[in-house]
Image (tube, rainbow, N blue to C red):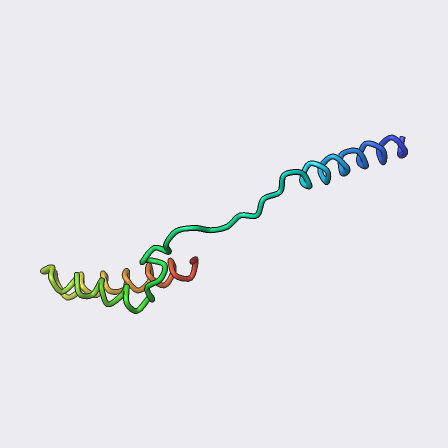
Length: 80
């Protein structure tokens, strides 16, 4: 029983190794990097603050929007 299991596992391993060695082609990135990835978190936050200044809202709403802008920009940049 163990010999059969070892034989089957050996064949599976051999097939997976052999199938990956055929037409291997390295992946190369192309194109321009988007501005959202290049720009710093501070620049994104400053841009959001400028947009908030143009909109009329209460002080409390503005504070909430600033906090939201900080959290979202830092979280997204941390992922990138």
